Length: 506
Image (cartoon, rainbow, N blue to C red):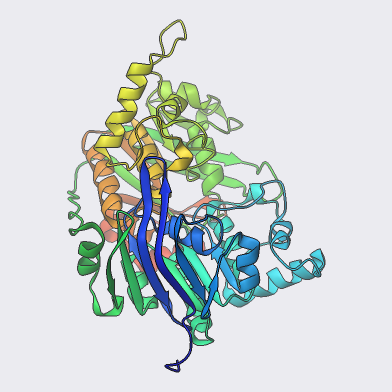
């Protein structure tokens, strides 16, 4: 870059206040042309708010913004896109009832026809290795597939500044590698990146500059390539995350089981479940790896009771056939579930944290149906404190929390129920390193207390860290199980393509 070339983006003393909290306090940040710049911080540190200010989705209370050397006031995302700024949000902004192509079309130049947009999506998807069908309705997509749509939509605008908020949180390692090839190519062509991720190794690989936020303020600027994961953790949270204590244990009796579970997909874009057999024992964490969209969602619906079409004896909970039993009855029998979608399925966005307790917990309900608000608020406050959830008390609406803090609350709500069986999908999606370590530690503590845990995750490192046994899901089928100590990342990667040989253990 020439020394006299203006900065792509310059923020000066940006401040944003909300009732009860200052999200950003006098934040200054500079991004050069053709630079990948990381923004690092704990959940609730103010990263997403700052990105929304740059994208025009949030208006700052104080401060100035310069873009390509010119002072600008970015009033809305449409103006931001006209300037060449695109953003991939952590929480997706997609219309469920529209197709992939229609969603992308909404944010693009209206001189293009839907057929042209569809063609461009297919071309970009092929070029970047982000497999997606433009004709599919968004409500049929998994979280990982929705992430691909958001990334493709942003790339189609040919941005000068691309903001990525946790873009790899639900992508497989192979998909991340492909995405990084794309991002590095964009940077080499002069595009600037603002990159938020809790995966420190990604930041060190991709970014040449890093601004660290803590409590809404800038606490450091560095070149992440010259830092270690440990030093970045200390800058971000003031300490290194505690080491996970995973000790081998002899599992107890089988508490949860699927026997020859087969289900035809409910819509044309779903995945058929084919002869699924799995067992989860007391005091055991069983992990399911796989590329998003290979039947994980359909399997979890059948196991949690959201889908009751299966044969009654295809799902067994503590010895009882529950295949035709709904979620409420399964919870009464000791099964709890953490879904992958935080807002809308794991929590009602507009309801308070205390009222969101009622989605899966009934301790505050009297036999006559009255709600004891004191009990309810005490429950919510306990989880806020135990899991270090940054929220403005039990009355805070779920949608007011950062993604990572809401995840901590939802996981905490189900762990606190002391279930016999816990199903968890993407337990640490979008959660900072300290909080991820805490969630994984709490899951292992639950396992050590005798709970049977089934964890579906696209984070292979996470599955290797907490699982006792592993399965892999591909094309609606489940691999044989393998002991974690006998598995390798390369082998699991092969199995993700459905290439597993008959194995002695089932």
